[in-house]
Length: 286
Image 1 (cartoon, rainbow, N blue to C red):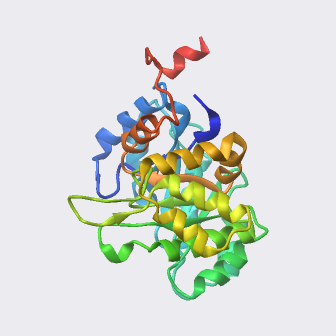
Image 2 (cartoon, rainbow, N blue to C red):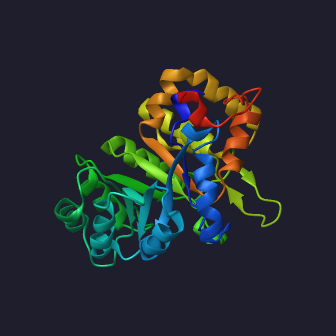
């Protein structure tokens, strides 16, 4: 499998709309990492309050974990404690919401004091005027941004112009980012069940590439609005391996409750080839 899509899918099976129970989500995640597409799958995302439960469910198994900190830097201590364990969940990232009243500089300072050097931080950008000062604080650090691209309500979805400005801001400041929520599929579309307009992760790849080439927000917005799967797939092919790799250096991953949806889209669009005889990834090393 091409390394262009490595680590694209962060496993958010515990979160809406999937809401998988932990006893099902953990074995499924381990199975993903033993499958032929294992290279595509990144860490398991867990709320900080469920780390003990996750450790018990894993037993003798282990997995990389990205820890969600909904209350911000004040919850770094338990995440750090788990990062120092030799067995069970291996904390490789934290994802934090910035509490009201906390500045970007204060967040960066707290991360510098409490975050292990081998753990990546994703700081969620708010949909408010404070977004720019937070991005400015992240500039020049090793920390990444997190962009929320949807949810269970129409108001949770930024339109293509708003998302374009976020992407442009991240690229111009040299801040890599991940996306989360409402981003199960490769191409922008309207969900028939909910009638909500969902962004596509390949559209985001294209918009990120355009930002790297110096294009303005209106060009990025047009790419984000493109809903024809054939056109989007062809545009990705035109980027070539180098173009996709450069975009992925900024757009690092997406959090989704479904691994099968983005994987299936990449296969159906011809951007990932399913082997004729799928086998476990661990057999490749034998």
